[in-house]
Image (cartoon, rainbow, N blue to C red):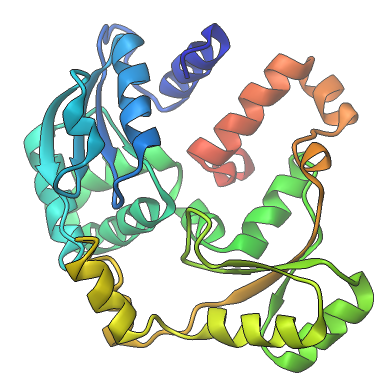
Amino acid sequence: MTEPFSLERLGYALELSGLDAVIDAPNILLAATDRWYPTARLGMALANAGCIVEAVCPPNHPSGLTQAVRRMYRYSGLSPLVSLRQAISEACPDLVVPADDLATWHLHDLHKRESKRGAAGREICKLIERSLGAEESFSIVSTRNAFMQVAKEEGIRVPPTAVIQSTNELHEWIARTGFPTVLKANGTSGGDGVRVVNAVQEAERAFYKLQSPPLLARAVKHAVIDRDLTLIRPSFLRRRPVVNAQSFVTSHKALGIHDRSAAKKGGPNQSQVSVNHCVFHGASQQRR
């Protein structure tokens, strides 16, 4: 974010979001559900780029240790949509930038709820779509397999991915792809909900664990010791996440973009800007 090209991409994203070009210092609201240090660094980078930065985040977030965030609002893991809506209403941001996957999904849910309020919720819906892209893209972003397919269509190298709903499907996947293989649960982020497995029994154990809702004891531990309430609601709702399988790809192969995509879009830099816009702003807008 501190590199000149990163600032160029920020400006490009702001332009594509529909903000008036005369805005000298856009007001950015960071939305975070976890106490990750990268969120604080993102706030500093945005402030250095000339943005006014505010944040809705859990108490004692590291962003509070910086001079970059002008004002902080309290995020509640027990009532996330209420806390996000209140922060948006008070901050009146030009863009809201989720700092983690869970914050993104909360904003999707908030959009759905506000859209049912008609005219009363129209401004918040417009803000979320301006920030995250068209509503049609939300289901793609929140589903790993669908998101990978869109990325593949955009010319990004992605590993083969499939939804796994049973151990029989898991065995079929292993027979096709071999080991190691990667299992990932929808609705998780930050490395949580990911397992790299190297044997059939290990894969079965990982599948059952990833498919299970968070244990109440684990949710209480996170709430009491880590002061993290985000697992309380999923634990009580007992919803089983969708598990995806991906082929294991070494790191140097996982970051590439097809040469033909770069050539088609006018060189590596323009290609990277376009891919960034696809992820940040919703690929479905390009398909309207």
